[in-house]
Image 1: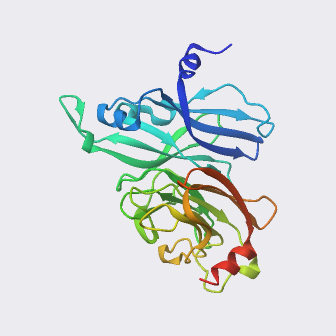
Image 2: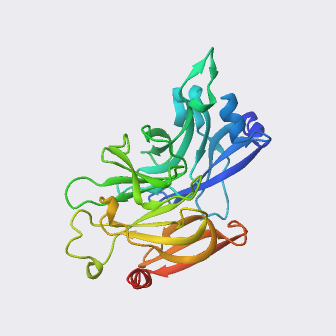
Image 3: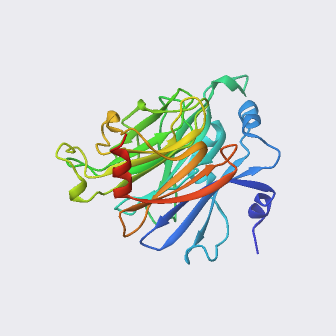
Length: 316
């Protein structure tokens, strides 16, 4: 038996899959948005009427079966919901911290100004944010937001620092020709800074990208990598003019925006959205990405080892 609220959501289309795995309870949370049919993102921005809901389903058998849909829109947005023109999660993946905190990347279009109660569309801006759970998904809370810049689709990773607490790193899409990088040192409650990264370009209108944290072998670490114990890998189209040539970038010093290597191109030609994963128990990675004649014709999976990555980056 489904509830009336769930029945209403059945008339919605689902978008932006964003899974996060709880290692302690062995539960997969598959987040997505349910959007009322025939209601585009632009229509929501112009009218200021949100038609999107943040929802998830769970699985405890690695996706063989799924539990009922749960709507957490009010829990995540709270009072901000009245100023939210629309909202979305991911797409990509969420993460779990060493302490067990589940973190999901998202973005909203925030209504910054109204006249006579009506939103001013050009004052409705996109902002990346995260939401999290400290109790294995029983309750979800709004976390930090990138208010200083206009950012959209994002992903996050934890950077293990040599001195001080771990840092939450966020890579966000923009229309400003470069990615925005933001970091948080206070348990994901607020971003300390957000800056354009001149080493990571964006095509016109931007594109989704993926980021993961990786703990390297001692033999792969270098003497001057003193700020962090972990590396960051990032996947994204490498052209500033169009969505082509998907590349893998590596930063061995994640707290330095200039630390990104020149990318290793893993798909030449049209390339779109991607998602990275660190293969459990191995020093290897997986990348799921769009490609084909129009950049989103096919979805392809590519697996590569850290040795393959380093060998190809050394040729750049």
